[in-house]
Image (cartoon, rainbow, N blue to C red; front, side):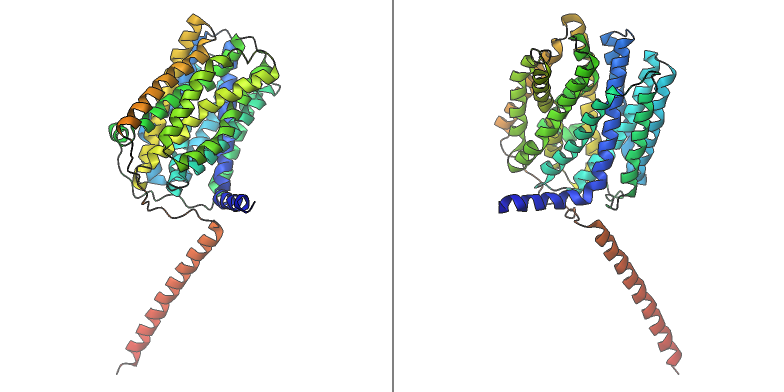
Length: 439
């Protein structure tokens, strides 16, 4: 019992300073998940082909790639909080523009811009969080970050049931939620990372440091992109109504939420590559069976979606943690951009390729694609574990421990500044008095 109490106290000390950070993350994820599912359903209802819908929705992740190559310059110039606020504000405005036309090309342009804004926002959040973490708690902190993300995203799926006779209510709701996401991040007292110190990072360098982490991000993008972009379309093709589609998406994201904490904590205790390999191996076997569960009632749908979501959403945070174990703080902003780019490439390839397979082979190709990708990842990871069993982790990190009370910390800084100023004034007065007393 005492061990449980100690663990809960440690968890409280970790979460307390990040309350505003997690609140802003949850609201942003709730908004973009609701928008993505809404657009998928409306294109299906408007008769847009599955393949064309997959291309339109995947342009969102093309925006991620652009963000990963360019946003680091803005973040390093103006800081994480200002950058996040600017990108989310633009996204909030773009959402409302969907109402003016249902043309797929027009929506594709909007999705590209929205992807740029959201990818840049995630760069701010993830590089900020990894700067505050160390190798002993990075998996735990990333799991809490992902739990917050998926809690927000799963809540967004439930908002699909909001009555919208004129077709604009959902867009207004999404815009409002995005605007609210700015409040906690803008008012947080948690200090931003040092934006004056940063180094360049190439994809080749990142792959050389962590090949399994790089490929894990890519495979994760395929899974996440397919689920968010094609999950609602898959549910529609197998005959689920909008209420059951909403539940399928909700339980899928909920499965990703529930698996985060135990797997994140486990990955802190052992080689993260083994954790990723076993997760992929389990998903390889269970993915095809999900197809036969989701249309046999609510409970079977819930179980199938939970299992699929568990494997879909866990690879990315462990891959990111594995990469950040091996780099230094001044690499983190650019490394975050590289990892978001890798996941974005997967998010583009996944929906396009899988939607094409679904158009040819039917809805079952949606789950069969999971088994194909996980089989490749297991073989790849096993190869690297065999030929490189040991990893040189960078346990010496220059970051300070997670602050327990940021208000007191800033109060202490202000006191230090006041004392420093007082000392300078006192010294100047004494020097003047000394000069005036000289003959």
